[in-house]
Length: 203
Length: 210
Image (tube, rainbow over all chains, first blue to last red; front, side, top):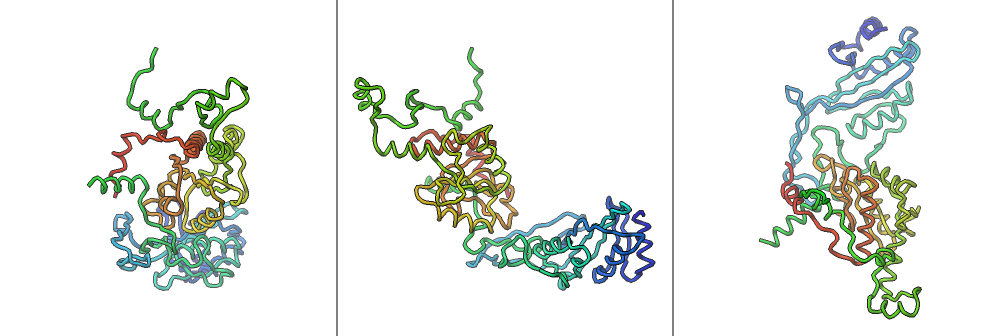
C-alpha cells in the first residue's frame, strides 16, 4: 500500500486519532494525536491489510528555538555560579516537542512515518514497548535526551547520561553546565591557555 | 641535487624532530658517559659504563606498558598502531595491560565524556608511579568538534590528569602515535629541545572562534 492509502485506511478506522497527512517531504508522514498512538499502533500491527511488524526507530524532536525560516538558535551563557549552573539560564522554551515513529512491514514491504506534537509542559506519550519490544530502548533514549515520559514503559531510566544528570540536553532551552560534580565541562585548549599565560607574563 | 627550500618543510622537520646524536647512542637508546666509555673500550667491547639513573630511565622507556583503554575512533588507530603492521612493540610499548596496576602509560584515545572522566581519573589514580599520559587526538587535547556545544565533553583531558605528550589529529594516524610515543621516550630519557613549537602555530591559537 502507498502511504496515502494507509492514511485513508487509518482515517476510516480511527478518525479521532488521525489529524492529517504530510505529503511534502521525502518521507510522507501521518499526523496523529499522541495520546491515541497505542491503539493506532495495535491497529497498524494487527490489521491484515497493514501488518506493520517492525518498528524501525522512534525519533524525538524539539521545535522550540527555530525561527520562521526554520533556522536554529542557540543560547549564549554569560556567567556560571559556584555550583556550575549558569547564573542566568535564560527563558524556558514554549515550543512543542515532537515524536516520529517509523514503521515498516516485512510482509508487504511498505513503510510509513507517524508524527505527533506533544505539549512541552506535560511531555508524555503512551509507550509502545508492549507492542514492539524494540521501542523500549528508543523510548529510554528519548526520555534521556528530551524528557518525554512514556506511560506504561517497563523500565524508564536514563540511558546514556549518568543517573543524577539534571535536565534534558537536546531540548533547545537546555543551559549548558560548567561542570558535572568535579568534572570540568568548560575550559580552553592548552595552547590557548599557555598563550594567555605567556601574554600575561609578558605584560 | 638538493631538495627545493620551502618554509613548510622546515617547520615540519621541527615538529617531527630530527634525531641528533651518534649512531651508538641511537642503537643503545641511553646516553653513554663518553669519558667512562673511553676507558672501558680498550679492555673489552662488551662493557659500557654509564650512570644508574640513565640505565633505569632506559629500562623505563624501553618497556612502557600502556593500559588497554580506548574511548572512541582514536582507539581504532591505537589498535592499528599496536597491531602487526605498525607494531608498537618495536618500541617496547606493545604489551597492553588489562589493569591499570601493571601499566605505565595511559593513551587517552578519544572523546572524554563527563561520565567517562570520573572513571578515567580513577584509572589514572590506580596506576603506579612513574606514569605517563598521552593525549591522542583533537578531542583528548581540547574537546575537538565538541568544544563549543558539547555539554557532555571535557574540553581537554589535561583538565583532569597531567598530560605528557599531545598527539594531534582527528584521528591521528598510527605513525603519528608512534612518533608521540618516541617523543615520550625522549622525555623519559631526559632529552630536551626536540619538541619545538613552530612559529606559525601562534597565529592560529591567539584567537578563539566565537
